[in-house]
Image (cartoon, rainbow, N blue to C red; front, side, top):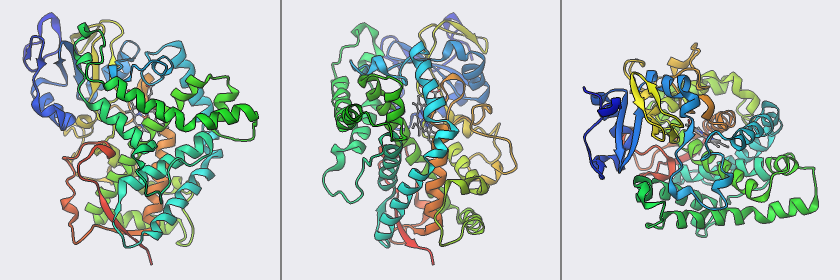
Length: 465
Ligand code: HEM
């Protein structure tokens, strides 16, 4: 394969102005780009309109992007739909590695997501999970849209941590598309629509398709949903609550900064965790012998009459291995969030031009047959007695990313996912509706994120005897 002109990485043919034509890209970009990488190699150049995009698809390429060139490649490409006035200036997710980004990440690391803070709040999470169990007991024998219920529970866990309030009512029969869940879903759908403004800088960021306007309306609605809580907290000057909001108020953050931070906790935290639990459940239903092993471990460690506690989690290595294996096969953020080259640099003998967008295909990396034995099989055992972890040091396994931009919610997410999954399996037997066979769960063809799939996972809970 010849490199492109100017020593750019190789890639499929690109038309002037139109860019690379990939008709199948819309439905399953991670699968499609994994196939293309087999032809063009682990570092591949595409053109979205006139914008160059480099896709890294092997663990060697990931080391280059996220370790060797991390300093130069940790900028962000912020899609035009999120460049909303009043939000983007305070965003951490879409900022380059600026001083503000560093300061916010430090607050997250030292105050909000420190082990001490997470331990203090464990009880609140356990209580929310116990409410989920009570709801499911009421639903015994009925069909349950799994992702819907888990999503609601995770929103309430985040609500408890952030401002000590629920944001989702399990029994609410009104149109909850107008609630937090609906807004997050809407924002994700809007972000996934190709935006001409992203493909052609000459358009100067015009919002022809109305995507930014629609996203701004969702953001405004979400801000309104907690405005009264923030206002009251400020007015009462009550420091008794041990939650994120209190930390942010005590640290002197302004209202627009707090709005952005709450949005960036609820948004990235909810669908990713839901998707992981949904895939884990689907994989365990498809692999009953693995389910038996998780159950045996749960029954050995936790008495049947007791609820699962976060302090039990270190004693459940097989459950942890199931979660790790799920994240290998079904990483919710298949390409990480788009990185951007802050300077021109050299990588694997190719030139990466300044301003170029970078995507790291964690889906391809997790299924690479050069690294993983039986890459398509669900084998949690591969993580037992293994040092391999998702903390960003093992580049063949990076569901949370690595380097400066590694997910700051990692420790919370892995606690929540394990706590909910353990509780679901400890309390209930799960079956599929009307004799549906687990193999019918179309495992490889669904899009990664929980709320964007056409076919939801429907299951029936039954209390374990
Ligand atoms: C299983 C659950 C989760 C997975 C797999 C996941 C994965 C990721 C990934 C891959 C990135 C992008 C890294 C990059 O661009 O290089 C990311 C970024 C981020 N995640 Fe997570 N995440 C999860 C849960 C959470 C939770 C629970 C929160 C917050 C409560 C969170 C907050 C964030 C934020 C704020 C960023 C942006 C960081 C930055 O740009 O500096 N995530 N996550």
